[in-house]
Image 1 (tube, rainbow, N blue to C red):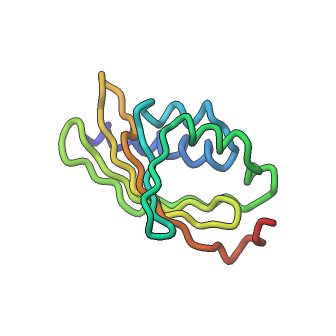
Image 2: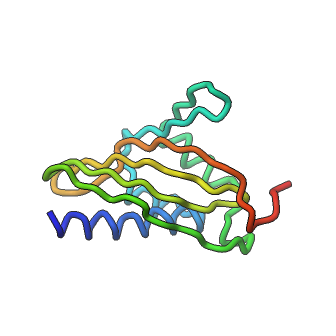
Length: 130
């Protein structure tokens, strides 16, 4: 299982870089096509499929181009069996600091994020976006 954790950790780096660079192709290496992203910023459930997520990433200001500092920290990485794992991390994007909860499944010998649940707070080290 140790090799699996290394593989997931490598994919987490691709994940963070993909969001920071606004690189949809990198994100497609991490997210299973059937993955959904969930949040409830105003107390109402938001459920985004990957097509919606990729559209949003492709058309927003890219943090790397804006010059925002790269911030990424893995807080928890846990594997409960040969085909299931969980990661909790912090990721700075634009003027927000996200806490992401990623559920991983090993499908056909490859690790994929199958669900993401997240929340965000304002980031004190980056100017608010207009």
